[in-house]
Image 1 (cartoon, rainbow, N blue to C red):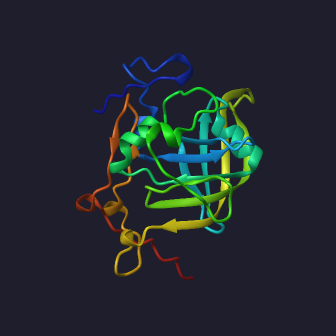
Image 2 (cartoon, helix red, strand yellow):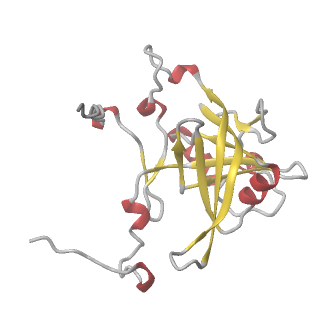
Length: 210
C-alpha cells in the first residue's frame, strides 16, 4: 500500500527543502536580458520560465520580487531570452548575484552583449539561441482568494529567433540534447541536462473518425 507525505502548502511542507520546484522539473531557465531607460544593461536568470503558445510564439517568466528585469521589460516593452547551456553555467550563475543598482551583469559575468535586430535589449553573444521578445502582458500573481503575492509574470511575443546553425541537424530540426541546455530542478542548486540516450519518441494520437 502506498503511503504519502501530504501537506497543505500554507501550513508548511515539513521537509528539509520545499519540494514543489523539484517536482515540477526540470524547467528551462529564463536567462533574460533587458536595458533600462538610462541605457544600463541587465541580465538575470529565472527558474520560472516556459513557452506558452505556438503562433505567435509567446514565452514568459515569473519574478519573485519586483526586480530590475521586470521594471526594465515592462517600461521598454522588450526583453531577450537567451539559452543557458552547460558550458555557460558558471557565467549564468554569476548573473544571479545581487549587484548594486546600475551595475552591468554582462560585465560582471564576462559575457559579450550583441545588438538585437528588432528590440533594444542585447543578446548574449555566447549563447547559441536567443529570442527577441516584445512584452504582450504583465501582471502580479494572486492567490485563489484574490490576494496579491510578491511575484510578477511577464509574457512576451517572440518577434525574432536566432539559432547557431551548428545546433541544427541535417533534417533541419533543433538538436535539443546536443545544445546541452541547463534545466533547473529545485533544491539548493540542482540542474539537469537532457540526454539523447534517455529520450522517448511518441506521436500524438490521430483524431477519432466518425
